[in-house]
Amino acid sequence: MEYITGKESQNILNITTRQGLNKIVKNNNITVKSQGAGKPNLYLKSDIEKYKKDNKKNIVKYKPKSSVKKDIVKKQRIIKKKETIEKIKEETKKDLQLDNVPRGTNKQELNNEDLQNPLNEIGQNEFNRMVELLKDMGTYKDADRSLVLAYSISYQKYIYSTVASAKEDDTTMDDFGNLKIHPYMIVADKALSQMVKIGQILGVGIRSRIGIETKEKKKETIFDIIRSKDNFD
Image 1 (cartoon, rainbow, N blue to C red):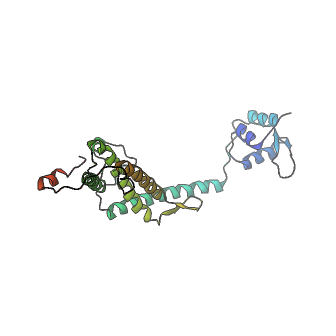
Image 2: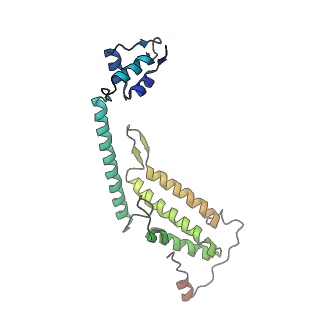
């Protein structure tokens, strides 16, 4: 005779809870084998299969009322979380005086405009500043353009995520009420790490400039200033 666990019995009967299994066992004289104190019971496999065959049409998945209530509460929490996220986005846009959410902060499909210029106003200003800085150092090359762009994208994500995270004191709670770091704070940390890596490649910062030849800033004319306004567009 082959005995199987309660979980295996539930899978055969296609039911989701131990309560449902116990109800079937109690009302249908299914053979149960005890394994001793503290250990789960085993069930005779032939009895379980016979019951399934004889009652195939009558087997209904048992779901206690408490489980239904938990599902409702969980859905309400999800809805509330979504509302909170949207509220934070709107408040952050307002605080940063942005007309649009920084590209990449939502899951909307990218269009051609996004691919041509992934920078918002904050990112574009940082792009211009970095180009000016590297030109002043005498280390800027056209080949660095994509790196400066990547740096600027990380910068705008860092600024946006830092402001958004601060609206909930950089922490949040999971479904069980446990305190954890806010996801926006994690994004900000990742963006900052990316900025540091790219900054080292570009030679930004005293330590990064060791061994890199730089030149003194020459006196600029009005035409030099106009030409130095390098936009990503």
